[in-house]
Image 1 (cartoon, rainbow, N blue to C red):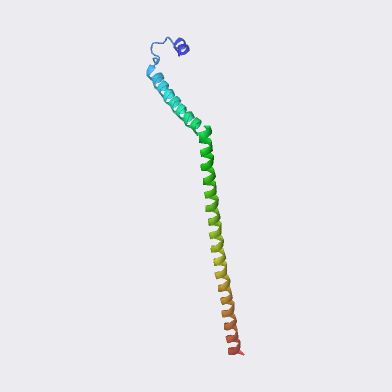
Image 2: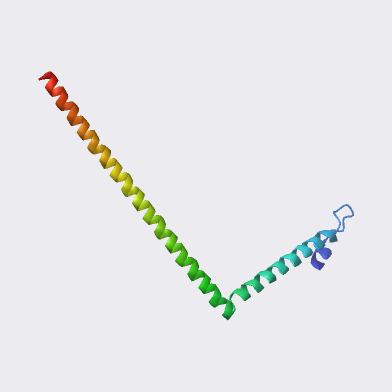
Length: 111
């Protein structure tokens, strides 16, 4: 700030030094620093030896739960796909049977 004051022009019409701008910037820097301190304290508490084991246990439990949910989803999707495939195969068989019956009927009619 001293450099800026020394470098300020001696022109009386130039914009004056505004201390409020610097005060607001300093207040914002102070608030940011306090938030950073809180974040670092929370991070430090998370990585404390006792807390790290607890965090590891929670992560393991969440991983097992996610694996179980994923397996259930894959099993459900497989069953539904298999069911849909069986239905489509059944409809295809019925269409072949209906076509064969229609063909025999038309063959007898025009023969």
